[in-house]
Amino acid sequence: MSEDSKSVLISGMENHDQTNVLRKHVEFFDRNNDGIIYPSETFEGFRAIGCGVLLSSFAAAFINMGLSGKTRPGKPFSLHFPIEVKDIQMAKHGSDSGVYDKEGRFVQSKFEEIFSKHALTQPHALTSEELKKFLKSNREPKDYAGWLASYSEWKILYILCKDKNGMLHKDTVRAVYDGSLFERLAKERAAKKQK
Ligand code: HEM
Ligand SMILES: [Ca+2]
Image 1 (tube, rainbow, N blue to C red):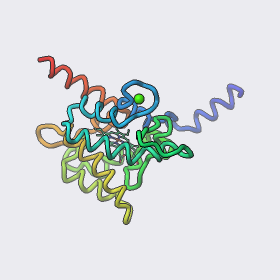
Image 2 (cartoon, protein in one colour):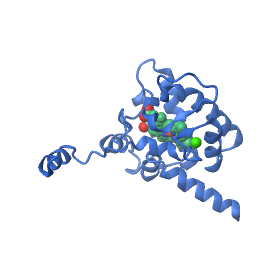
Image 3 (cartoon, rainbow, N blue to C red):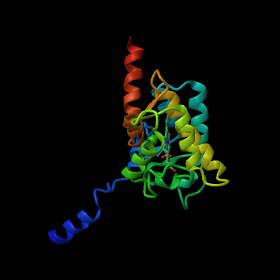
Image 4 (cartoon, helix red, strand yellow):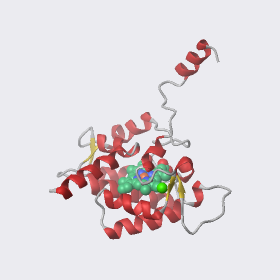
């Protein structure tokens, strides 16, 4: 490709990041970095960021049973419930925010929209009521599985990361999308444990 056509292509992308950020969201849970997340790894990842045994067990069961098949099209069902990181975008559900597009890319404008539309008390954070309204506004009719998936994702995030006034901050939400939040929580937990 000539340099000219390359620059036309790049300017046409309008800063749209082409990487599959959703992969980064889940890579933390691929504990041995082999591209596959087994239930034991989901469990271990949840424990590492400070979740209890009960929540971590439920999360591992539901996430791996729910997403395994979706990320392995054409492959036989496996009782080990592996999730393939490379095709994680196939596990997207309905009634989400649209911040990940169908290729797992991060859509900045959709991210900004969460706060411009719903953060009415403080511009860079959501109260629990605002979060509730945001989730309701994403609901597609009768998409009960999507409602439950979205509710669980956001509720766990809120419980883990709200501040002392019950606010969920924009930078926290930003960091969950690329998974950097999980690394941070794990470091904080490890530091606490050492004390
Ligand atoms: C404590 C752990 C986790 C939290 C707090 C969390 C939270 C979230 C949040 C807030 C979203 C954004 C949803 C939206 O934009 O509406 C999301 C999306 C997603 N998460 Fe997680 N997540 C966690 C762990 C995992 C794990 C272990 C997996 C799978 C291995 C996973 C797979 C996904 C997928 C596939 C999406 C895309 C959903 C979509 O856009 O339709 N997450 N998660
Ligand atoms: Ca693995």
